[in-house]
Length: 621
Image 1 (spheres, rainbow, N blue to C red):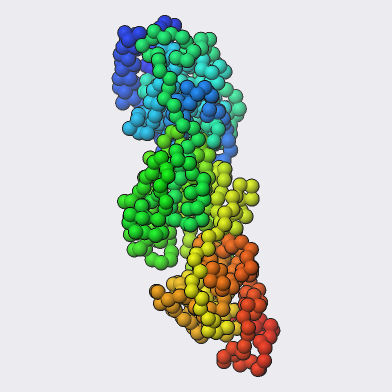
Image 2 (cartoon, one colour):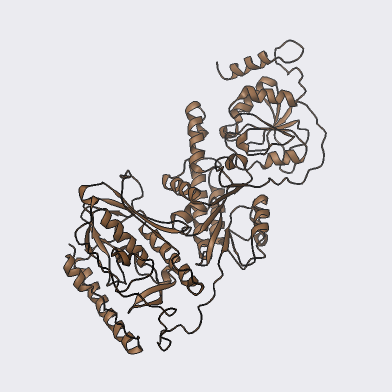
């Protein structure tokens, strides 16, 4: 049971602001009235108040947009208001995250405060401007009226029944009050409540410059006009502030200038240390920026996380979450869903811990791709410029490639191993579309973002000691031995050409995968490039071509696919993924061929038709 419109309005009627200079006595009386109204609302809601609605996490839902509101985030450019503008946007981030995805069933009452909860500092809300007694005063949670205004506007467009709504007592520059489509809120006695005729889903997002509210549901005739309960009341008086009223004797007057807040600070939130990203951040960051990493790699002697964290105003880490991730990944199988789930859960924990670095004055975030979907899903990136350090294909693109390959080769079971939760894929897709810049050394990834990719150079490792080539047939496959790395195509070529194969990586396709092929497994401390004529990686997907970079540094020719992300280079030959014949041609151009052992062929040079015939035989044709 819900309160009738007239009843709920009477219970929550706010004190009326007077056109007098506020005094401590009037403020005390106002506070007493507020306490009484809050207590009255608590009792009323205990008897017949609305319930908190849940978010829709899966399942199909109509995509028709039946209401939309777009309002600018930055409405006051005065320097003295900058800190409050940043606070307002931070508060909008917190509240929008609580609203995004909420499903309102038909006939259910949506309550702003029931859904948002109290805007307290303990819950991450900060100081913004709030209208009180006719004045715009600093308050925790200030600025949330922009969100309630937008919800009210969208509710009118969607044909919702307005159960409770209160107009502002004063007009605020740039707000919806001037149009009579505003809805002020104050915890908990001044609420916005509405009831849809059919189910609807709320989307609440922040772009870099706008607050965007969308209602999605079934369009009805009622949604085409203004709903009942909407009264276009336009306040005539203009809200005052310490910068405009001139009442310096007021006890609330901000005699000193607002604390200066540095604008344009960047937070660098990283994960695994790539030397390319290390150099990029070292070049880009400024002393006032902040830095967040999973764990202090230098302190814990973990080269994988050894970032240079000096030269920042503030630094933070998530050591407990990072160690938990390491343990979970070590316990997980080398391949399959369990390992990916451990990686996702670990990245989520690290992201949640590093969020504390995203204080209101952070207007730009440079974030590792692994942390990106979690920060986006929880609403921490809206209203900020976002730059992504991309180290792998987007999950949607990755899964599409694997699905296509699996459909073509259903016998290669490992092609179906990687699948991410649909909600996580959607969050990453939205965040990448929102991002202003994609930073990566991986050319195949950069190709997906032609308008905003910033391509940085791969960093070659130090060249190892030179080693003589022992055999022209000795070819390294850095692996691991798994379908998505091109293991099947390389195996066919190795059999057809009688290659000796060096395997420094793990074998994930079974112990018998290389049966009939001479295989060498270098020891842990051995130089796996010693005696190798070429390094081959005909991968369908490749995130970290470190082995190929090591080969180039050693002067060893590389045969790879564009999926490996390498730039054109004198020592690199690119072949299409899945094309064994092209791979064989590339190998013949690199290696001085001799008659393969036990090949059963006539003496002399190996002919193309003989190679093609052996490939077809291996493929079962």
